[in-house]
Length: 212
Image: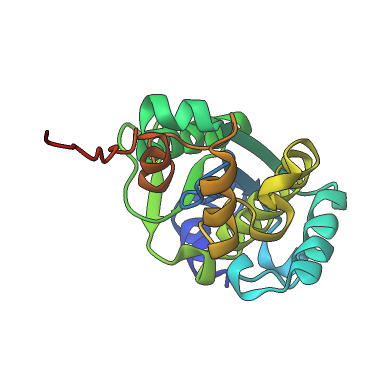
């Protein structure tokens, strides 16, 4: 999975710092969007078997995240935008803002970013659709972003147990939608997302008129 990194090394030199960037949590109805940026050692010095976080079990993601965080040669940064930020900016702008922040925190020479181009990106970058399955750096970022967000949702579950955040991590499952309909949104729900906004809309009241 180092083809993209190795191409950048050939262009810029073997000592350049390449960061991979990916996000977790764009689609859920609740909780933050989390972005990770990661600088890995060159392929010859790296043995952690990273992969797209979506292809891994929760247990395996946690194991790999622990290995990544414990490796002192690896530099990483996390940027978070809350549900309130998402409602204020919209999900795309909030994600892009966090991507720029996470990448800048590492001051890399080049950045590999998962997905479509990010406007006003402040560093030399390549944007790779499905990059988390094509680039080791992006795959590592996907693992750190996903596990970090999962931990945050476990904290939200302890605070708002009625919604089941520990199970669905804020995604719009049948269980989550049923809880949303029953209890209404909590402060961590994204009010700009249609299923949440619909719950907040006043329901029309049907009146029976009796004519004398």
